[in-house]
Length: 137
Figure 1 (cartoon, rainbow, N blue to C red):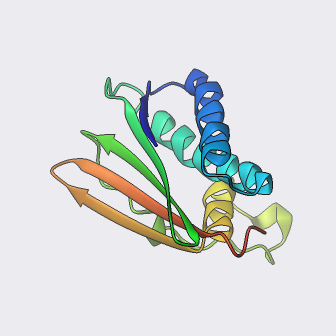
Figure 2 (figure 1 turned 30 degrees about the vertical axis):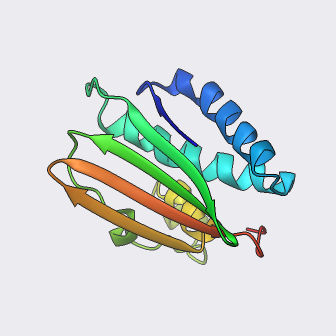
């Protein structure tokens, strides 16, 4: 399933409906809904936040391949940003010493099993892979 969403936080409601429809259509474990919502919400929100004046919609594709869910988020006319290159969030560091932010990307990395990134001609595509045999965080 694929769909484009307006680059606006208000699109999250429709994104969550889209995710739920995908889970039902693919007959997936309903427990997968929360992790998918969290991961997609975090990335979509960052896309909106860091390119607020970009008029282009954000593409979201959800598909299954054997025992995996594949999530692809595509942005058009944006700067390169590979989440795999972000610094690891130190959960052991004193809470008062931790930098503000980066928790969301930390959770994305923990909830999925693999992350791929492609950037060509100002088109950014993040591909996340979640193994179905492991639906826990």
